[in-house]
Length: 163
Image (cartoon, rainbow, N blue to C red):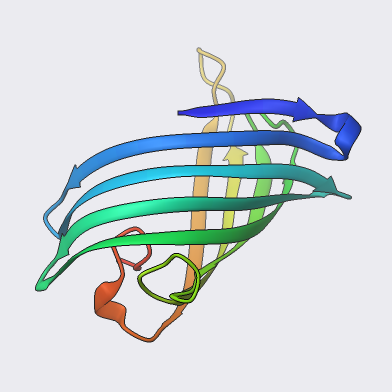
């Protein structure tokens, strides 16, 4: 559940509160997760900066690894969007950088730093059909980096999976 409050008079586009609980079972991992957090969103020129602080608990199993963890995760992300139409673009892209981390010295069971960079694009082409739609080509590329002292303590939402 998310709740957003606009606060333009404080120089903040919006303040967002988050409370969540989830149980996920896949072929690769099982996790039971609880989360609470706050975030702010600001426009910096044509970039949107989102700053977050959250507490998360996980009870997980990933292959031979399992554990119950809690961590305090601050994060910051920057996003740039260029599109001819923000709702239904025919041509555009989104560039995003996301940095998160936690420290076992501050409310966390482990230490990590995680960086993700992503590029997403759309290109519409061809004549419009009878229902007014054109063909659309969508593409996405994500790259990530993760540093930690003990990978086996990390819950699934912090790790990277392919596929």
